[in-house]
Length: 350
Image 1: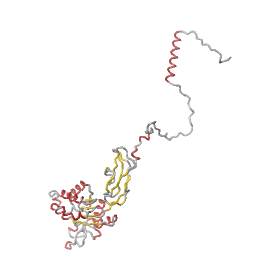
Image 2: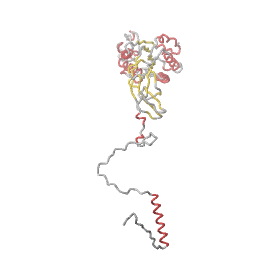
Image 3: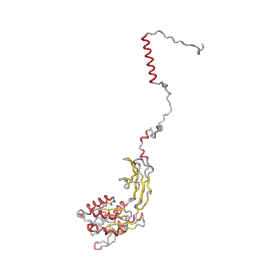
Image 4: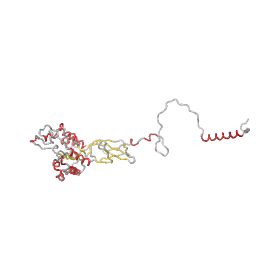
């Protein structure tokens, strides 16, 4: 029989009315199911017996967007940001040398910062004059988050140094006191007083450095009557480092009445006007002068000057020249005390 020409006839069998209605409802339901749930391949593929890969799928991006859709998008990109570079990149430099911080890229609202005290304090800025030696740090900060740091070692050298001091700095011979040297009382020789020891460290960085001494005993005893013009000769020397190593001869019970704080502040201000860059380093007393020391610390902190704190040496027999019979000489630092003073001053200078 030829299928192409064969005619099929549809015959309808007699149906009860209830059966007819039920059939229509079944056809409608099947049509709805087909429309709501498209046909899918229900064939279950054979399970693989090979090893299962744990490598995560590569990150993908949505068309028109640069944001990765993988979990890596949540990583804080600030941690991968390279820190700023120092220019110059560390080394032994003259005080006041300009230092720049150069960043390869800066996120929006970011701040370049540097620290001269091992990260205890941070200052915003991408350039500054070099006033402190040691390991300097640089970083980029956005809000409260900071990127990784860069650390570079710096040393600061000076050309002209002025040391303001008293008998601990230098004292001429007084045979009646059993003192026969011409150096810091009561070092055993000029090579053992703090001035010599400090000068050697300064020369190691700058062999041509010139160190000048200024007697500050008159200021300690008569600061309320002194004229700041008396310091003009020292200012003409144009020091780039001033070490203010005075305190012992200040009358402890008169500092408030005679306004030592005001005159000490004026003294520091006077030397800050030196031509060119100048670093000022202060020092507390080798003797027990708590009120005087407190004023020195306060004024120095107000001006941002470092302080060589000698409080750990006060009244310690190990650092006093007990080999001298005269009590006034004996209360001065011995060689070990001089060494400690020089080291504390150097730490404040660098």
